[in-house]
Image 1 (cartoon, chains in turn blue, orange):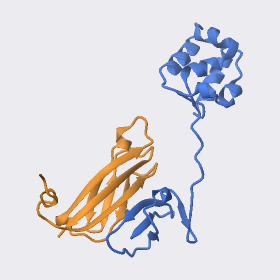
Image 2: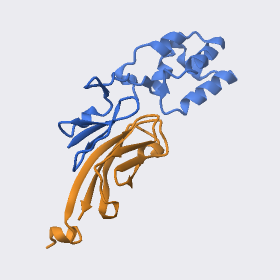
Image 3: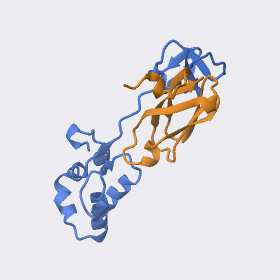
Image 4: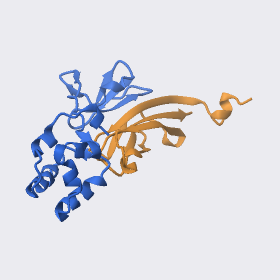
Length: 133
Length: 93
């Protein structure tokens, strides 16, 4: 006997092959050991697949600096203590998460230090394959 | 040459059950229901695990336990990513 077990939100979290029938309200009998049902929502006798999760918007540190465009070298060699701190902070990261809430604030701090960068474009531009970690 | 009986310590198999449990992000424990077994005569084996955690062993390392005659519980320390584990149990006569 094969069962899909659902949680309180009716989402399948376990697939089990038992040696005998099991009777429980959270155990839905299925035809085979189908682990692709994990994550599906059980509704009106149907297993509904989850919506695809968006791919993380991560880029390499180098790709992030490249997004500064013509201002890149000026920013990286800036003597402004605030800009230096931001560059150092970014440099020790494994990757840059473009959806991180404080990223835009950091870019705006660089902008307010007199550097001509397009903060929205840096954060929102489509990620190219070569930019990914 | 080894015989099947040696592998099972001379005991005969009464039942075999298997399954997969997913610990979704935000969850650090889940319990799967099984057909009733005698826990004193049952061996639970973890077959393997996968996780989308890149960095944290607290999320990728999962423990499974036969917590009662009808329950297998999987748990872990962290819960920022998902983990999925496969198990199999053998109940002897």
